Length: 91
Image 1 (tube, one colour):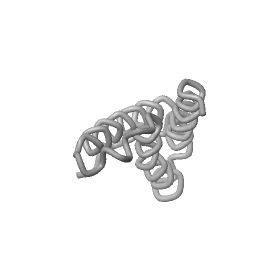
Image 2 (spheres, helix red, strand yellow):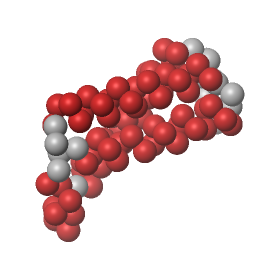
Image 3 (cartoon, helix red, strand yellow):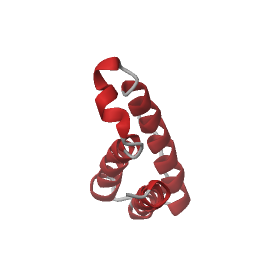
Image 4 (cartoon, one colour):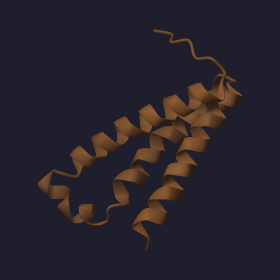
């Protein structure tokens, strides 16, 4: 299935938010497993793991599909969220 994606900054921002939200939910559910409770002590961990699919999406769009503006939108969302997480949760 080929989903058409327009090469706009807004489409990259929307895709970045959706992918990061889905990944955050998945990793939060995974950290509920009793075996993984030791890793759930740091609240920043699910956010950092949620950024990984965004980086893969950004790489796929920037290099593979040549959608530079959409890839920049994904990059923008990823870095804004990661910086906000470190500011909110501190060290």
